[in-house]
Amino acid sequence: MSTQHKHVIIVAGAGPAGMAVAASLGKAGHEIIILNRDIKFGGLAEYGIFPSKLKLRGGLRKQYWDLLQQPNVHYFGNVSIGKDKDLTVDDVRSLGASAVVFSIGAQGTKAIGVEGDSAQGVFHAKDVVYHFNRLPGFGDRPFEMGKQVAVIGAGDVMVDIAHWLTRYKKVERVTAIVRRGPAERKYNPKEIRAVCANMDLEGIKNEFDRIKDRLVAVGQNPDEIQKGLFEEFTKCEPAASRTKMGFRFLASPKRILVNEHNRVRGLEMEENKLEPKGEDTAAVGLKQFYEFPCDSVVFAVGDKVDDTVGLPYKGGTFLTNPNKTGNDPDDALFQAYDESSGKILEGLFLAGWARKASEGLVGVAKRDGDWCAEVVTRYLETKAADSPVSAVLDKLQALLKERKSRPVDITGLRALQAAEKAHKDMTDCIGEFKYVTNQEMLSLIERGGR
Image 1 (cartoon, rainbow, N blue to C red):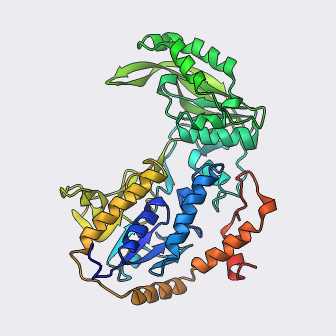
Image 2: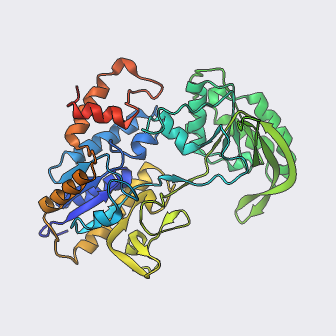
Image 3: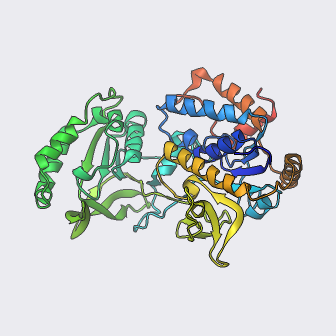
């Protein structure tokens, strides 16, 4: 693109999507201001990847550090946007930037929606992932799991939770509760290597015996499916505990059963059968119920955006323009849209999970950020540059000072990084030391890393 007109772009959110937007538009010569809720950049790349994948996380961190050290990129960590936060959406839009991109991820969690879901011992998978990645607000909460844990789901998130429960919590038993059958499991076979040394093979064989007639009824071959499942249990990481892991298939949790102290004691489950649905299958309840004993339940039920941010919102997502433009990528998919006025919010864009919650992880979010940058570039070509970056930064800093905010810049991040690296002998289960509260981090940064 032409680099004659330099614009100021504000990117809210420093996860994989936001950093991709910033990298692409920064490379084109625009001035980029990044506002991030967390002190550290990275979003789910920092707080959502299983900790043992340190190589992947390390590569991403290096890319992000390189980006933040560019002279036209200005980072403000510890700045929240929303109702009663450091800044409102209107504050951000009034700063004088040519465009604002919200890539603030899916910060809310969907309601579990079964009776008893507020009992002690009921957890959202995302909260558990944040806990073992030591995200402030989650890292120092106890997460008491008990001895027997049910994890609802059959995808990679279930495997990550099971990995943590077997390797670090060392609970007695982990059971993945799956609404459909073993043929419909969703996890990547490579991921299961983290826990397959702990598989209760005898228990899984018994589970196949229990459901085989229902598999045969839809033309599935139980023996072949079991063989395929067991063949995935190769190249297993060495077991680090005596935890037993198993599956409960064709089962839907209907109610969480609690004791007199409102603590989980089990699940009421409904037996399901499979019915063909196009090329796929659907789980259909049989109205047969039974109790499944457990001490805690982890629901991997998906995410929604934070409806308190102040962007137009409906049914778990921020609204984008329903009127397609015909461009590729289509501008409409990334434009924030106000349903009440029937108009787009001029110069305001959405990317990553803010646009489409729970859609893939790092690679998908990065690609979405790249597409959004293309859409923003097209928009900027129709606009004269608004304010110089110095004016936008002055206005932003004055506003943050007035709100008594404590923003963290790249100098602060360097001090924090050095202090955490110096704790080499104090790693915990995540494989690297991290301060667990914002207060600890801010105190250290404000002392210059000492």
